[in-house]
Image 1: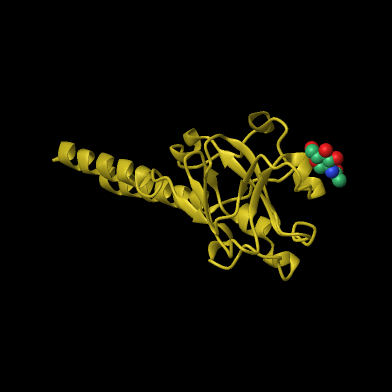
Image 2: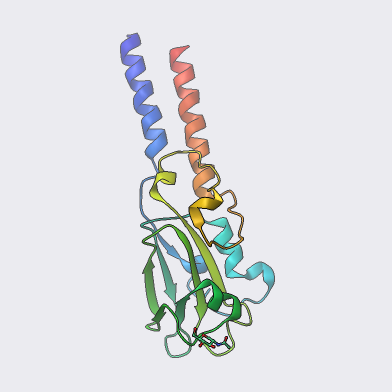
Length: 179
Ligand SMILES: *[C@@H]1O[C@H](CO)[C@@H](O)[C@H](O)[C@H]1NC(C)=O
């Protein structure tokens, strides 16, 4: 009996750890379809959205916008800071852009539309390596992991909160069953 209970407890704990933590995600930039535009206020900025989300290697960013009027430029840190649109790393203008976050570290995106970046249509995402997906409670990434990274503080995220909750739930179940 104890053996069976233990097996059930272990299964629940393992499930708690992996449910919701193992899927690569497509993340719609800004969380809604019309978000790729000049933000109406500071609190509406895409960096506010990016700070609340957690990005892991293998996830993808998706943009929906009018390809006649706007574009997405992936640029260097310097070009991001100065809104220099002349030589982007990548340029996307099909209106339905998807970019796979294929490495850890910072990715910088600005609008290619004249004057838009200067008015705040830009954002940085800090991509974490896959190992953060399986730790449940994610430690804050160390600066060394992001050489030349931006000075954005990684904040608590949906992943961290959910992972933390699930671990707590697993421990609770284990405790109850082994009591
Ligand atoms: C923009 O970037 C290009 C290429 O790196 C550089 O030649 C140019 O001087 C930059 N323009 C400004 C205004 O900084």
